[in-house]
Length: 140
Image (tube, rainbow, N blue to C red; front, side, top):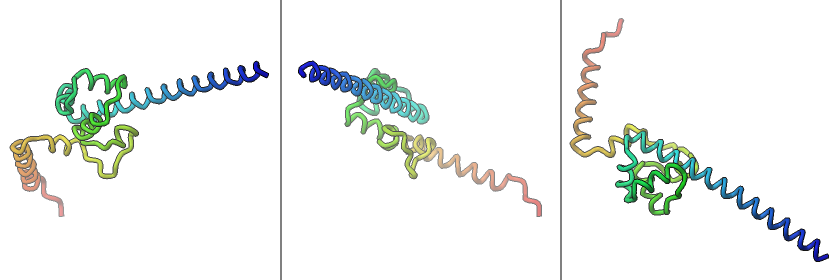
Protein backbone atom coordinates (compact mmCIF):
# COMPACT_ATOMS: atom_id res chain seq x y z
CA UNK A 1 0.00 0.00 0.00
CA UNK A 2 2.82 2.39 0.90
CA UNK A 3 4.60 1.56 -2.37
CA UNK A 4 1.43 2.41 -4.36
CA UNK A 5 1.19 5.74 -2.57
CA UNK A 6 4.87 6.46 -3.23
CA UNK A 7 4.45 5.52 -6.92
CA UNK A 8 1.41 7.78 -7.22
CA UNK A 9 3.23 10.67 -5.52
CA UNK A 10 6.20 10.12 -7.83
CA UNK A 11 3.91 10.16 -10.88
CA UNK A 12 2.20 13.38 -9.71
CA UNK A 13 5.61 15.00 -9.13
CA UNK A 14 6.74 14.02 -12.63
CA UNK A 15 3.50 15.41 -14.15
CA UNK A 16 3.97 18.68 -12.23
CA UNK A 17 7.54 18.98 -13.50
CA UNK A 18 6.44 18.30 -17.09
CA UNK A 19 3.67 20.89 -16.78
CA UNK A 20 6.12 23.41 -15.35
CA UNK A 21 8.50 22.78 -18.26
CA UNK A 22 5.68 23.28 -20.78
CA UNK A 23 4.60 26.53 -19.10
CA UNK A 24 8.17 27.82 -19.02
CA UNK A 25 8.54 27.09 -22.75
CA UNK A 26 5.24 28.82 -23.52
CA UNK A 27 6.38 31.86 -21.50
CA UNK A 28 9.69 32.00 -23.38
CA UNK A 29 7.85 31.79 -26.70
CA UNK A 30 5.49 34.63 -25.70
CA UNK A 31 8.42 36.80 -24.58
CA UNK A 32 10.25 36.16 -27.86
CA UNK A 33 7.13 37.05 -29.87
CA UNK A 34 6.63 40.23 -27.84
CA UNK A 35 10.29 41.14 -28.34
CA UNK A 36 9.94 40.66 -32.10
CA UNK A 37 6.90 42.96 -32.16
CA UNK A 38 8.76 45.61 -30.16
CA UNK A 39 11.70 45.40 -32.55
CA UNK A 40 9.40 45.60 -35.60
CA UNK A 41 7.59 48.68 -34.29
CA UNK A 42 10.85 50.35 -33.21
CA UNK A 43 12.33 49.86 -36.68
CA UNK A 44 9.16 51.10 -38.39
CA UNK A 45 9.53 54.32 -36.40
CA UNK A 46 13.18 54.55 -37.42
CA UNK A 47 14.37 54.36 -33.81
CA UNK A 48 17.57 52.73 -32.65
CA UNK A 49 17.60 50.56 -29.54
CA UNK A 50 19.46 53.36 -27.81
CA UNK A 51 16.80 55.93 -28.72
CA UNK A 52 14.04 53.63 -27.44
CA UNK A 53 16.01 52.98 -24.25
CA UNK A 54 16.31 56.73 -23.62
CA UNK A 55 12.60 57.30 -24.35
CA UNK A 56 11.64 54.50 -21.97
CA UNK A 57 14.22 55.30 -19.30
CA UNK A 58 16.07 51.98 -19.28
CA UNK A 59 19.49 50.79 -20.40
CA UNK A 60 20.34 49.81 -23.96
CA UNK A 61 21.10 46.31 -22.66
CA UNK A 62 17.55 46.08 -21.24
CA UNK A 63 15.95 46.94 -24.59
CA UNK A 64 18.23 44.48 -26.37
CA UNK A 65 17.35 41.72 -23.88
CA UNK A 66 13.62 42.48 -24.13
CA UNK A 67 13.71 42.36 -27.94
CA UNK A 68 15.50 39.00 -27.84
CA UNK A 69 12.96 37.60 -25.38
CA UNK A 70 15.59 37.04 -22.71
CA UNK A 71 14.17 39.54 -20.26
CA UNK A 72 10.56 40.50 -19.56
CA UNK A 73 10.03 44.17 -18.72
CA UNK A 74 8.52 45.41 -15.46
CA UNK A 75 4.95 46.64 -15.81
CA UNK A 76 5.91 50.34 -15.72
CA UNK A 77 8.65 49.75 -18.32
CA UNK A 78 6.19 47.83 -20.51
CA UNK A 79 3.77 50.76 -20.31
CA UNK A 80 6.56 53.19 -21.31
CA UNK A 81 7.48 50.96 -24.27
CA UNK A 82 3.84 50.96 -25.44
CA UNK A 83 3.72 54.76 -25.16
CA UNK A 84 7.07 55.27 -26.92
CA UNK A 85 6.05 52.98 -29.80
CA UNK A 86 2.46 54.25 -29.82
CA UNK A 87 0.97 50.76 -29.77
CA UNK A 88 -1.48 49.03 -27.47
CA UNK A 89 -0.44 46.56 -24.79
CA UNK A 90 -2.70 43.99 -26.50
CA UNK A 91 -0.67 44.29 -29.66
CA UNK A 92 2.70 43.84 -27.95
CA UNK A 93 1.51 41.01 -25.72
CA UNK A 94 -0.77 39.10 -28.05
CA UNK A 95 -0.28 40.52 -31.55
CA UNK A 96 -3.86 41.83 -31.61
CA UNK A 97 -4.33 44.77 -33.97
CA UNK A 98 -6.76 47.51 -33.09
CA UNK A 99 -9.21 49.00 -35.55
CA UNK A 100 -7.78 52.40 -34.69
CA UNK A 101 -4.21 51.37 -35.47
CA UNK A 102 -2.03 54.36 -36.32
CA UNK A 103 0.11 54.04 -39.43
CA UNK A 104 3.92 54.20 -39.08
CA UNK A 105 3.99 57.47 -41.05
CA UNK A 106 1.53 59.14 -38.67
CA UNK A 107 3.45 57.80 -35.67
CA UNK A 108 6.67 59.29 -37.05
CA UNK A 109 4.93 62.61 -37.69
CA UNK A 110 3.63 62.69 -34.12
CA UNK A 111 7.20 62.39 -32.85
CA UNK A 112 8.41 65.37 -34.92
CA UNK A 113 9.01 68.80 -33.48
CA UNK A 114 6.50 71.53 -34.28
CA UNK A 115 8.83 73.09 -36.87
CA UNK A 116 9.36 69.70 -38.55
CA UNK A 117 5.59 69.16 -38.66
CA UNK A 118 5.11 72.58 -40.29
CA UNK A 119 7.78 71.76 -42.88
CA UNK A 120 6.07 68.47 -43.74
CA UNK A 121 2.68 70.19 -43.89
CA UNK A 122 4.07 72.82 -46.32
CA UNK A 123 5.65 70.10 -48.45
CA UNK A 124 2.36 68.21 -48.65
CA UNK A 125 0.47 71.37 -49.61
CA UNK A 126 3.06 72.14 -52.29
CA UNK A 127 2.78 68.61 -53.66
CA UNK A 128 -1.01 68.87 -53.65
CA UNK A 129 -0.93 72.11 -55.67
CA UNK A 130 1.74 70.76 -57.98
CA UNK A 131 -0.30 67.65 -58.71
CA UNK A 132 -3.53 69.62 -59.08
CA UNK A 133 -2.20 72.13 -61.60
CA UNK A 134 0.54 70.18 -63.37
CA UNK A 135 -1.31 66.92 -63.99
CA UNK A 136 -2.49 66.19 -67.56
CA UNK A 137 -6.02 67.26 -68.34
CA UNK A 138 -8.51 64.44 -68.40
CA UNK A 139 -9.82 63.65 -71.85
CA UNK A 140 -13.41 64.69 -72.39
